[in-house]
Image 1: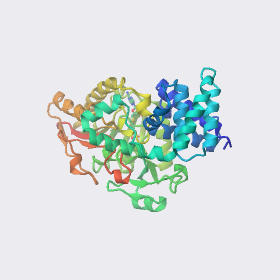
Image 2: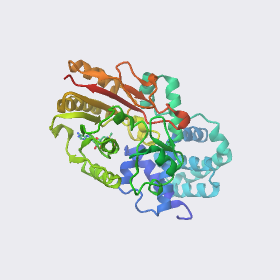
Image 3: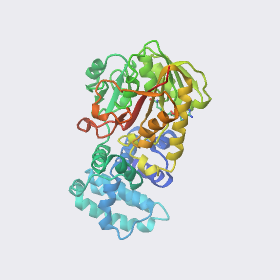
Image 4: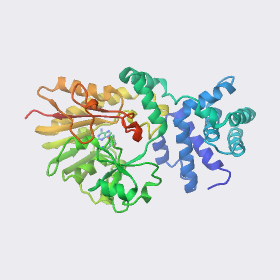
Length: 422
Ligand SMILES: C[S@@+](CC[C@H](N)C(=O)[O-])C[C@H]1O[C@@H](n2cnc3c(N)ncnc32)[C@H](O)[C@@H]1O
C-alpha cells in the first residue's frame, strides 16, 4: 500500500466524481478497470473509502454546511466529503488534510480552493467523530425518498435508511447443507435457510469457496426460488439468469434448468459459478423476448429493475440514478411477464420478482397481470422464515431492508407466484 495514501484517495475521489456527476455505477466503473492501476491493498481502500462516502454522503454534507458560505464545485465538494469521512472515521488529521488539499491543488480549475479545503478540513478535524455521531442517519436523496415515503410511510423509510447506512453482512446459499457451511465459515443459519456472516472479509478465502459448497446470495434474493417448493425433475426456465444465484438454487434442488440472459459477459459469470459449484444448467445467451421455446413447468422471471432494494450494498445507486430510466423498466417488466406466461405449459407456475422497493415494479405489476390474463391466479407464498405480515393484498411477498434489521436487514424484494390456467 502506498504510504501517503494518495493513490487510493485519488481513485476514491475519481469514483465519487463519476458516480455523482456522470451517473455511473460503481460496479460498472470497477468492471471497466477503475481500480486496475492500484496495488491490492489500495484497491480495497479506494473502494471502501468511496463506499463509506456514499453511505454517509448526506451526513458529510450536513457537517460541511456550517463551514461553507456556498456549495463549491463538485471536485472540491467530493474531496471535502471524503475528508469528512476519513476524519470522522478516526484517521490522523495531518495525512487526511494534506491528501485532500493535494487532490484539490492538482486540478487547475480548483487549485485556488486549496486554502478553503485546508481550512474546512481542519475545522472538521477539530469537531471530530463526536460531531459525526451526534448527527442524524443520512437521508436518501429526495427523488427516491419521496416515492418510498408515499409507498411505505416515513417511519418505515427512516428504518430502511438506518439499515442502508449500516451496510450489509454477507449471505451465502449452501449447495447442500446450510448448517455445515455455517459451521465452516463462522456464520449463522437464518430462518429462511441462508447462511449469514457478519464481517466476512474476502469472500474467496472463506472455507468452502474453492470446493463450491456455497455461493454469495442475499437472504431475500434466495426466497423466490424457495417459493416454487420441490422442483426436482421439473423443467424450469430462468429467464434473466445472470450471474446465476437463482439458477444454481434450482439446479441444486434437482430441476432441469435452462438459464437465459441477454448479456454474454454476465453469462460468463453464470458459467464460472456453475463450474465452481459443480452444478449443471443449460445456458443460452439471448434476449428473453427472442427465446420462444415453450412447455416449461415453471419459470423464474427475476426481471431487470431499478435495484432500489440493494442500496445496503450499492450506496452509489441513489446518487448515480435519478429515476428517469424506471418507466422503461416498468414497461419492459410488464412485457416480460406476458412473454414468460406464453412459455409456460398450462397449469405451470411463474415466479415474478424484482429487487425493487417501488410498488410499480412489484405489487402493481401483479395486479395488472391479473387483469390482463383471465384465469391467472396467485399462489400463496410458502417458504421457511416468511412472516405472514410480509404477504401483500394481491398475494405476493414484500421484503424490505428494515426486516430482520437486528440481524443486518435484507435486500428489498418483491415476489409472487402466478399459476397459468390448466
Ligand atoms: C436482476 S438480474 C438477474 C439476477 C439473477 N436472476 C440471479 O439471481 O443471479 C437481471 C438480469 O436480466 C438480464 N437482462 C436484462 N434485459 C434482458 C433481456 N431483454 N433478456 C434477457 N435478459 C435480460 C441482465 O443482463 C441481468 O443479468
